[in-house]
Length: 413
Ligand code: ADP
Ligand code: ASP
Ligand code: MG
Image 1 (spheres, rainbow, N blue to C red):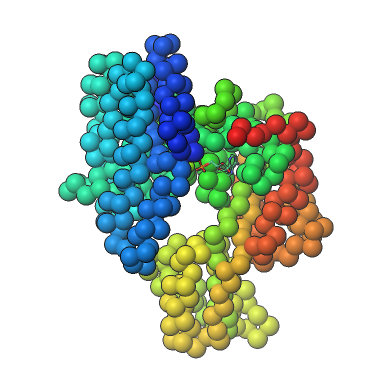
Image 2 (cartoon, rainbow, N blue to C red):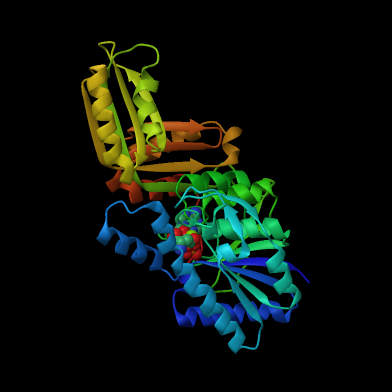
């Protein structure tokens, strides 16, 4: 008998029929004698619908009220899933994040979990009930509802698995597991049976939304056995492991991630004096805007160009801040380009394999794709390119590094 935490994402609970199917799946685990704690997302499209409603009223709703609004999506699915389980004769008990007491900090819309009180969950498990917890939400010290950032139900599930010392955390989604890249972009993307935490962390942070990055951080930190698998069919999916898989054919590259929603800002003609990068980037960071890739180069005239990327929906705010910086530093101009994207190759094997960057740049050159910025770390290489080339670049790299599945049977929809 095992204690399993299972998370079902938006598509998996996207309709009453899907919720009934999830209930059947959970019933199967209960029949085997497992204790089950379930985390559910809102029905697919619901969180977006709620965001759009808020935006109809005001452009920048207060984060506190946004959280009160967004948390309602998950409250619907916990209740419906419990009803579906009860209809089948299984005891079930729903909890909102606040009812469990998933304590977070007070950073509304991007809160971090600080502590989980597992006593109420244990009490329900002892009564042989399936416990169904609303993903993506918690409460702060004073009882305000908080949410954990988009995709946050993954993090709820892994954090619960850590708090309950579960035997496994299973993330059920709408594809069979983690692929070499998004199977919706590359038809012959290959399903990975295992991937290391380190690689999964990079893929998640570089845009592969199959797992929210914080969930991978949690799983690595608390050693939670984590598996991604399909809620639509029976397949062991992908196990996130601590060790590299030495049997992998070409271990140099695990996968390709991409990010569409970035924008590039350049301040040109900045005087080349110590502290200048801080003077340009500092005010942007102080405004709570996350700065991603940064490059600085000194031009022939001895002045600097400083270029960096931010999330696209922060880019206009960043541009305004930079305009003031530009004036005070007597720099030349601020250029905003919103039509860019970032494509990244990830693999722990890069440490021991030379020539990967060159092969990557050649594959892009062969498609006449211009690289605007390059950044590297030990296990990843990222390039910023024009947005319209995103799919072409991902497919070209996928085939240049032979990542494809010869049988290409990825689709589980
Ligand atoms: P859920 O609603 O279940 O949380 P998400 O939409 O958040 O599902 O994440 C699953 C999606 O992640 C898939 O449908 C797929 O399009 C996308 N995805 C991006 N990169 C990958 C990858 N490397 N492997 C699998 N899926 C990926
Ligand atoms: N419903 C939330 C979202 O759409 C959380 C989640 O699905 O994980 O982002
Ligand atoms: Mg998700």
